[in-house]
Length: 189
Length: 109
Length: 102
Image (cartoon, rainbow over all chains, first blue to last red; front, side, top):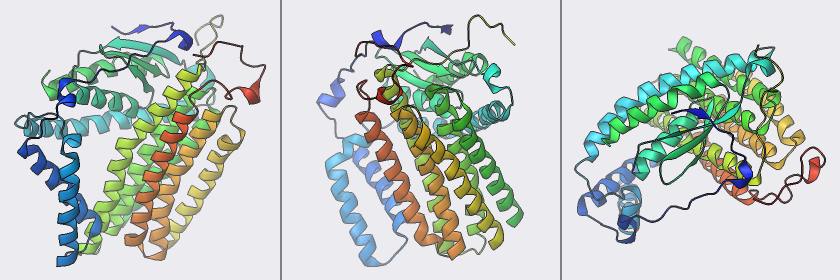
């Protein structure tokens, strides 16, 4: 439910997230290390642009070292089997997100160039309850809301209560709820 | 291909102009973040798409790698720009800045 | 085509001057931070256009990528530093009421 909130920023309390059990005991499986190594090596090849033996050898060595130390940073979840489905649905989600961002950009540009802009905009702080559970899906939702012009995520509590700043009522009324449903469909929650 | 590059760069310049005008005209801190963070990101996407199309015209390995690197910049900015915007708005909320709202006594236009 | 990129770069420099207005005038520190962020993202595009003008895009792309990363780190560090109330309203005293430190 989207409703207008009259919260004053002074007495807002920030909950600190508690570490989940997977953070305390890192589950370093072999498959997540291999995936991390492949991603890092593709980025190395893209950024270096030289394909002789010395540069590729240096790339393999440095990617191996980084993978050894930080394999649990890029893929914290030990459940590797679900990853290709999530990535495929996420790639299908990107064009829809780009279209929505473009439409909202044109709306904000209409507001900016309008001569009576001060009467048209109506900034307010809204909030709603999300049903997403995991960290990565909440990060995706917050970045999607912020990337759309007209809405900026201010805070997500650990219970999934999202507070965001909207520039007028139309841009904040329906789009975050649709994004919430779509991202829940991506991560199957 | 040249024509497409020119059209994309001009669209990017239009979005950049919207961002620059928006952060001057908007009334308060929170609403200034809307054009500053997001119109610049969209303008960067459009203009970099035009430059990448212009770059990969002569089709060789180096040129394609350069175009891919330009699109990598766009992907990087699309990930980091919402994070930077969220950091600024979080600092504003913690510092206790009040959001500007429409006057209650004035009727809706 | 060369002249088109030249005029696009000049127009981008004019837009940077517009953003510099907010970075200089802006009432609070965070408004200046918004201006600095806008200047940084425009400079990333301006560096690529400069590389097209000098026919050295493959070198300027790396500089632009490093500049984008530096801009991100700058904004994160500065917004973490200025997230306290003290010092934020020193330059506009009288327009904001006194409140407790949140």
